[in-house]
Image 1 (cartoon, helix red, strand yellow):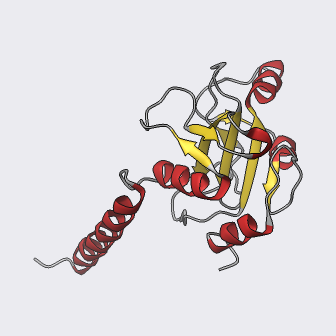
Image 2 (cartoon, rainbow, N blue to C red):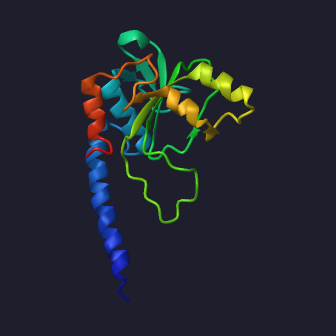
Image 3 (cartoon, helix red, strand yellow):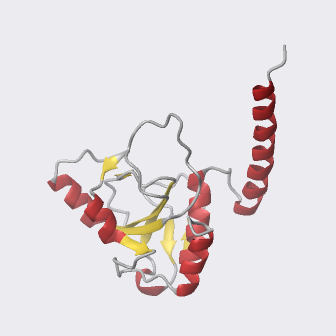
Length: 181
């Protein structure tokens, strides 16, 4: 019995594994979107990552600029569905979210999630936590963040949040990973 689709899938998985191995060799961690997002954000936004990828509450610290020394939790979501994994830790200063295109939170049947960056958002962690609590939002995995909050936190492609300014060089690097390609 021969299953051509299964054979094609097996070949594509082998190709993907080879690509993932190359990327893992570059970033020094297993190739998953979280680790790659951390690595990309660290390179573009001058962030020193924690040695352990399992550090509680935050992934690293900003090195220079107005946020120097501040802690940051980096997320990369293939779609911006209005959800954010939120912690109640006092150790965290900011969330830096690399997001794909906006999409409703719905089933995934027949959909694709290409890895790209359509926008970047910087949330003040304490302010966001206070706003979510005031609305009675469940804090934790997939906390519901209003569209207006996402818009207010945007630093790329539109600079709406001004705690961290995106330079033309940074915008160019982000564009290479985005919809414009």
